[in-house]
Each structure stands twice: as structure tokens, then as C-alpha cells.
Image: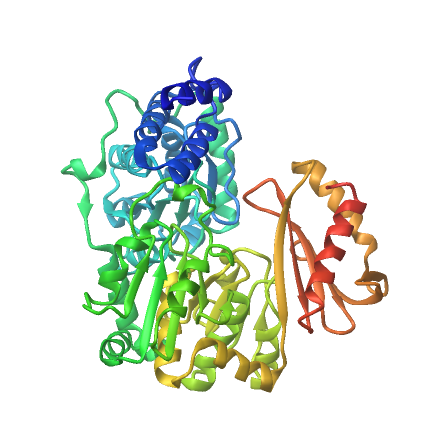
Length: 578
């Protein structure tokens, strides 16, 4: 079959051609990417042609989103063209601005917004950026049109990462930020993150209002803040926005707070430049971090700084672009080939808010690295304070805090839940590879994680795996894992089904690997976490961003983790969700 015949057949299978609403463009994109991988770049032109159709849908779609707008633990996510398009993105922007138009009459909103009046919000303005997703720049154009029309200053970052944009809010004293990204979601997703003046994920008191107002505007077909009387253009082509160097603001924030966190950015980079025994490999998975890494290392000219997947590719070559064991394999292979004794490897997701590490021999997820960062700041740098971790995270950090005589703050999943301890906890991290530290952004940031990892290796003269082994030898070993499964029901039906897990209460037994384990403690602040008498645990909760149920487990033995995973699966099957 010729290439033309293959394309025609693929268009037929994916129902392409009738109209945008009925066309499954991303199934076609996936098939064309597979062909590009198997047969070569001659398929790229066909991929480009499909993306031209998707762009037309983004611009022309006047329907309601296929899935109702909802702000979850980290903003709104949906399908490109089907859920996020010029019209829907404009209306969601208007729903956010309605908060600022209301603050003069509802002063209680100021507590969550961080501004006390509409005039203040307009003057301080919005930090605006996007990751490498298809349509990011045109979505930013739609947001800009609404912001400028409503009298708000726009600080335009262009393509950037979540942590960098958060730093920019703090350094520019902006009123809020909008970041057009779905984080680690697959190639067909776009997203919309909104952070208020504290630069962290917006409080539930705000996201709930944004959700309801956006749905109201979309259903009512309009907002006085939105007009569609002229074509949307890139903010880069406008003269009424204020472009700025976003990464420079990030560096400024880190340097300013050296005395708070003890992370000496310039010294770390200079030491790496001089140290021939250290190699760093960073895999950007084609995401926004690819444009920052060289500058992050101050333009060092060395073959000991290696970037992988540092080209622009909105398809991510067909993979799910998340920090995972499968995706970090290229970093491992590269490090194994290097002769340097000290090795730092990292993989970063598209919007740079998640990071996972390896030294070429040992893979280190945030469950371990968050605890290591706490140990490093507390014991290595002499900083005193609590640790903050989400309830689904490893208990290794709890153990460290107990020994140090410090508190552990353990809220529900979502970085916004750390708000009460920002400026108090030395480290705050979550199970899904997100981290930040005291004196830095209240938003997860892969770059501060990378800087910490390099600081550990340079100052301790040992690889991350050896450092982890040293901690585990002294404080005990913990073996976490997590997974997610699509489920047969969603919404209220899913919540009702998960309530059946309440029978697993304190004193109940669970079959784990053929052994009956008694539940000694239950934590139900976010799903259900069942802790067994031997210190192992499993937790089940609905995803806040996808039609999935997520489960998390932790064993005190290397061989026990798989049995806990199977026990969690068995529970889900028992209540009819698989």
C-alpha cells in the first residue's frame, strides 16, 4: 500500500473529514507518529496537515467543551480543540477576572486573591506563559485579548515552566499567573493553570468559583469581558504586552533567599563547571525545560552537561511525557556509558513541575528524594523545621522528622494543600515527583530539585543512590509504588463506589500476599489510606485530573510492594470498579 493509500485509509478509520466535532484527530496523529517512528520522517508532512486541522478547530469551535470545565488539584485540563479552544479559553479567563471585579464588593476574597481591589490587580497584572503543547501560543493570545481588554497588564513570558512562572509572580509582584499547560498529560491534552498572588496553586475557595462561573458563562454563550470581533494573534506580535526574561526572575529569587534555604546557586554551578568528576544528564522529553537548561547552567561549555530530547516535538514522539521508570531509561543508558564517578541524571515533564532522578544504577522517585532533600537541608545545611508531604507519599520523611524532633505536615494530595506551612516547612513534596523548599516558590519546581540533587552530589562526593542507602541504613528502608487504572464509572457514581471501602476500618484484615494483615490506622482525608501493623500501607483515591482511580502502596520490604499492589487491585475489583 502506498503512503497516499495508507493516509486515506487512516483518515477513514479515524472518521476524518465530516466535521471537526466528529473527527478523531489525535487517534490519527498517534498512528502517523507510529509510522514516522517505524518508517521515517516522510510522515511528518502528514502529521503537520492533521495539526493544521486541529488549529482550525481551535480557532473556529463555537460548541461547548465536550467535558464540562472543572478546576482540579492543578487547574483545568481537557482535549485540544474539543475542550480547550479559543472560545472556551477566553470564557475561562473571563471567569477568573470576575473574581477581581468582585473583590471591591466582597473584601473576603482578598484573603485568597492577595489583592484588595480591582485597580491593584490591574496594575500588578498577570504573568502569562505556556509549555510546548500544540496551540499554547494561540491560547495565550486568547487570554491576552481578554486581559488587555479588561485593563490588566500582561507580563508575557512565552514558553516557560510552571516553577519559573511562579517565581516570576513573586519577583514581579504580579497579581496572578496563567500558565497554559496540562503538565504531564498525553499529547492530546491542553491545560490551564491559575495561581493567585502567593504564586501557588489557587485555593479551593477560588477554583470552585472559577468552575461554576466558567460553566455559567459557557452555557449562557457569553461574557461582557469577551468579544470575538478580531482574529486572535500571538502575544509576541502585540505591542501592548510586557515581555520579560522569566528564567532570570527564577534565578533572582533563588539568589535572594540563599540565607533561608542555603542553596547557593552560583557556587553550585561554578563548582560543577570546575569538577571533572561529575556528569549531568537531563531529559526534557521535548518539553519547555529544553529551552532553559543551558541558561540554568549559565551557558557552561562542557561535554559533562548532556541534554536528551531537547528538540521541540508536540507529539512527544508518541509517549506519555511523564517522569517514569520507562521514560528515564535513556538517561540511565547515557550515564552508564560515562566514565565520571559522580553522576546526576534527571527527567523533567513538559511544564517542568515534576522531576525524577537516577545515578545510572539507582532510580530515585520523589518518595525518596523528598526525604533526602529534607535530610540534606536539616542535617547538611543545619536548617531547622518541619517537613510537609502529601498523604500518599512515603513515610521515610515521617521517620526522619520523628528522629529530628520535628513535625510532619501530611495533607491531602495537591500542592495547594501546603499553603498553611509555606515558609515553615523546609521541604514540601508530593508522590507524583513534585518538590519545592523553604524560601522558594509555593509551587512545585523541577529546577530547584535539580539544583538540590547537584548540590548533594558535589558537597557529599557521593552519588544519590549511595546517599539514599546511607539514610536507609540509619533510619530504615521504605519501598513505595503507585499506579492508576481506568474505571467503569465517574463522578458521583465513582464516589459512591469508593464508599464501599469504608468496611476496611481499624481492626479489619486484608489479604496481602497470602498473609492476613490487620489495619492499625485509617487516614481518610483524601481517599482511604490503610496502614497495617507492620508499617506498610495502601491508599486508594480518585484522580483529580483523569477518569482513573489511583492507588499508592508502601512496604517495609523490597519483596512486599507487589503484594500490596495486588491487594489494592483486588479491593477495586471487589467493589466493581475494574
